[in-house]
Image 1 (cartoon, rainbow, N blue to C red):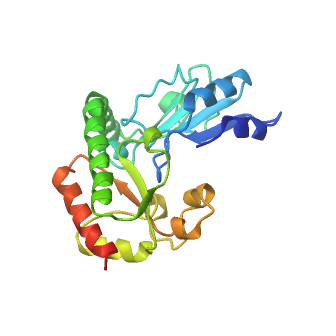
Image 2 (cartoon, rainbow, N blue to C red):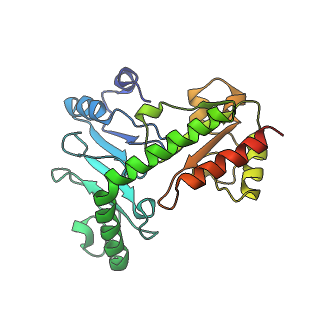
Image 3 (cartoon, one colour):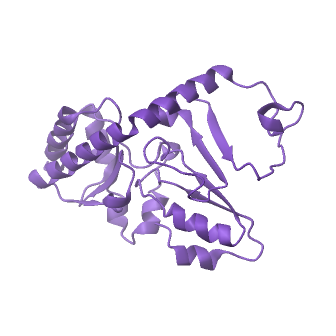
Length: 250
């Protein structure tokens, strides 16, 4: 989590913009957005938040949180790929980066992706309507997963504050195990997990997020991210726990 005092100390007289993730895409950590928004509003600094992971998973109130700009993406809420939106506070004037037309309120020229926009709008509508139900399901499945680790005596540590995190993400380090081996064996069992964000898929470098959190190379290199989705249920969790127990006890 970002410490408010650390952010305050990092601000300079010429700081005009601060951009912070609403919810981290590896650990699920939810930042203190309200406090950050208030701090930046008091100093007249524009506040942008990347809410790609959070949108549709937690309630967001851009006015109450003093958010000036917010970006998110459709594919994270089961919408079409290749479309996103940028919320911009009405009073904020942005210089266009492309020219030729006056589309998107004169901010971005070019023909709009109508099919993508409609698909995104419908996905957003459903995400908001179903959010409370999904949060309850994901929370229960996360609790079941952790309870399974305990029952099977799988040595592990949760990376991040589970009480202040996105409902669908869980990052766990498995003591004494190498993540490469865990990922391969879980994949062979038909279980899709990752050692970091989708953005860093394929890299051999350990997570920069976890390295910043822990001065513990073994913990960083034994971490797995579990991401829950609409199709997951209790049977999936039981299967993951069962297969993982076999793998770590070999």
